[in-house]
Image 1 (cartoon, rainbow, N blue to C red):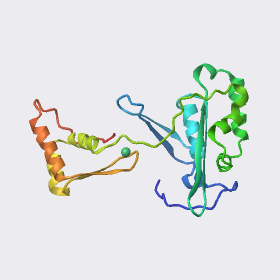
Image 2 (image 1 turned 90 degrees about the horizontal axis):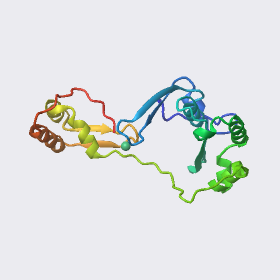
Image 3 (image 1 turned 135 degrees about the horizontal axis):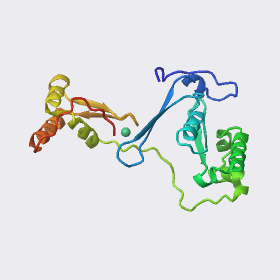
Image 4 (image 1 turned 135 degrees about the vertical axis):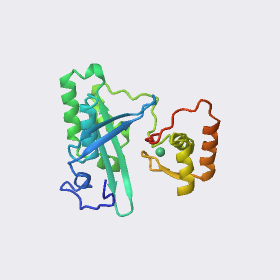
Length: 221
Ligand SMILES: [Zn+2]
């Protein structure tokens, strides 16, 4: 986003106007690292600028999984008072059951918002009970709290920097006095000192049968 500090009045429903701030012209870029080698990436046009709507559209069209994502955040003058979300997905065998999909759509559509439920101190199991309790809802004992975590580290940054090769690393030391890398996922900034880079150079010089040098490397971790 070009203007991340934007502030807009609430939309006509009295909610944060995320769609107005993001706009509906543009693309949603999704990078998914499912733990097998290179991350899977795809691009899809925005439909509304609202995060829940656009991610739902991505899941339905790109991954072809009937899905509904409801997100909410309630902010007052003190800060964020409640935030959360529900992702409902129909497993492949049930995806052909049009009536089931229709029923779920209308139930999700009947939610007037997610944060009012959280602010009423409803727990997620209570919300699910209310939403699909009559459809054989079973809450598994192995629940897991979702948390944000990024697998980036200085070691991975140094591993990526090594791909630049001896000459460019020497140039980074001489010209910039080191190197800086920012993780695209969590925005953590890593500093590689001249000592780090000298060590990489040493490693590269010791590597036998030196591999062809890559002048440009896209750093993804
Ligand atoms: Zn990161």
